[in-house]
Length: 273
Length: 245
Picture 1 (tube, rainbow over the protein chains, first blue to last red):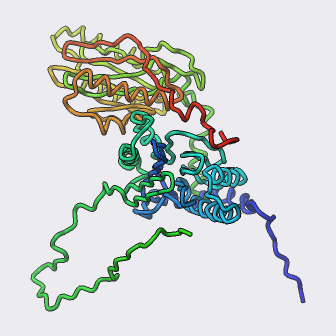
Picture 2 (picture 1 turned 90 degrees about the vertical axis):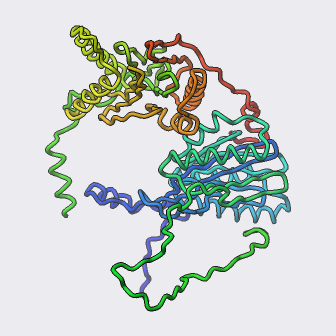
Picture 3 (picture 1 turned 30 degrees about the vertical axis):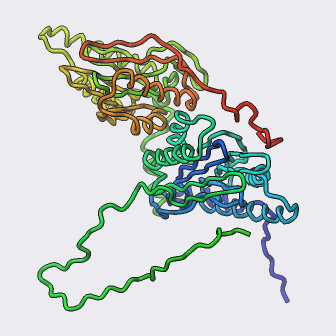
């Protein structure tokens, strides 16, 4: 019985074995495959009762829009949500992972999760990977110590801010925030400002588009407004349907819908414990 | 193996870049210029800073200059190239005056001239490293145009260069309208310049606003914008998040 020799990578972290080969290929002109990025405009702001997060819904693969209506506001805990910009796989994976860690921690301590717990878990993970996990996040939530809003950069640094924007549309959204934000915003003013900032990103940045998602978190209560605004409707649908040319006689018309339209009544929240 | 062959000959034909005597990168640069059309003419704003790399070297540089009787030129980018362009325009206006025929070069003509100059230099791989904003009023017609260092030129109701493209244009697209009064226009420009001051690292808090109407060109005295830093979250950012920053 011969022993099979496996090249086992070191426990944890990335294996950089293929880097030399990749460099050689790039020199020869081979284009590396492009990642699915969430081009993105994500924003957050603190208003008088809590935190409001906002995001657009376009995901791009290079120049192509691969998802017109993706979800960029990720659930972390019942009182904490996180918007993600950068490589879609990285933002999904890292928020999922920390969300699970938070849940275990909740069971362990018997208390509501705190925003700084999520912050520390995320930033130490990202720092460990030295920026290779390309996730830029806007983390917001309300816990026993009050409302919190943080930004987390791919290399692991964080900021605590009253209003924040990330992603390729961050400058367009920040222009709106810098000119219109003030303290003591009401819920409606806050939602309006967040929507304006995301729309600014959608219409002025090519990496962002489609619809606006909003999430309002207050003490003990949260509202996830999926597709709060749809400013890019499909406006020119042909009313005539399909028509045949050159006097073709229609003998029989039968329309079979490809998918059954089923109304789903969502009871309770997804992922609630 | 096809990929290797196609890459090699191209690189060897050009020769090493270090041999070039042409403008490769800018040294002393000015930041954004923002311009809008309003009811009576054109309003343009820029700050008075010129940076030398990451140092804020000069703080009293006028980056907007009147051209002839009807136009105003604002520039961002390499200041020495801007001064050279002004020299060329001086010559152009002088020759026009020498004809003494009652006609004078209007903003459209100056814009066209600038476009040709910029595009020509770009074709010789020796660009003027500037983004120009040309505004003017002649015979009641308002004109606002822009030319970039590679010769991209167009005319619009509101333009911005540099960082202004990312920070000021979204605001202008939302809040500009055809019949703004002078006060509205100045307020709008100040809003844009304030956001640029907060978010552009090479911006200085010393701005000038220029007004062009049928009567002529006036450039205001330099002044500073009011800024607000009293957000509660800035006072004690890490309260509730001990140990973070």
